[in-house]
Amino acid sequence: MTQISVVGCGNMGGAFIKGLQESGEHTVTACDVDPDVLDAIAPYCDETTTELSVAAEAEVVVLAVKPDLVGAILPDLELDADQTLLSIAAGVPTDLLESETDARVVRIMPNLAAEYGMMAAAATESTVTDEVRAILDAVGEFVEVPEAQMDIATAVNGSGPAFVFYLINAMAKAGVDGGLSEADSRTLAAQTFKGAAETVLNSEKSIEDLIEAVCSPNGTTIEGMEVLWDSDVEAELGEAVAAAEERSKELARDADGE
Image (cartoon, rainbow, N blue to C red; front, side, top):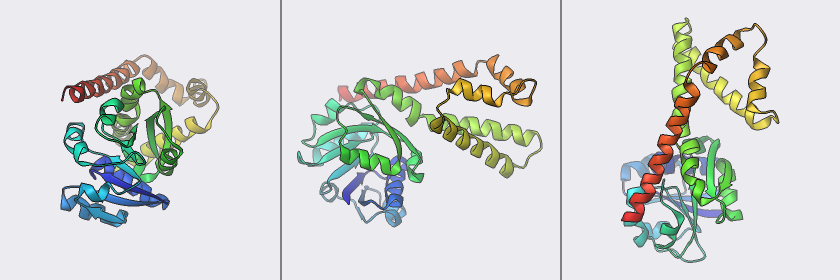
């Protein structure tokens, strides 16, 4: 079993811990300055601590703090060359992290679905080891991309869940407006997104072909799709992704300026 510590146990760090615990393949230490946060995450890990020195004993240390805290924490997180620092800090580039630690640095951008083993993540391709691949495999799916693509990956899979939640909510509201109960409409909308996503991941067809397969001539789906094709939904969603990407780039510039 790989010894893993997670520094910063908020939403993303906590989701990562819960996903790792569910896999049963790793021993996990949770590190945070907030005792209440540690109390909440304690059932899902092997040990909790407020001391960075304790967290630094693990083979793999996951840095899951806000980007503006990285500069304050890394100098006190003493790691050796035989350890791995797995950074979740959005927008903080690998070279900056490497300048502050002796450990091997792997930058990743996961998302909250790690809690359920359904994470989508991007990792910097030149730095990923088999050890890191095993950790990521335990909590979902991942792709390896060049460092230059991490900002767009952050926008697509890191920020993406919020965009999908928004769309699920819109569909659920439409169901309620049509007479479904809130509970039934929420279930139908969410499961539809889940099933559609699994279909995309498991089918060899293009997404356009999958849309066509659902759109029977003169049927109900084609009527709805005509509305979407005539709308600005695709452009608006593209703008949302672009805005998130730009913010990731801003965080990188801020980090370089510290």
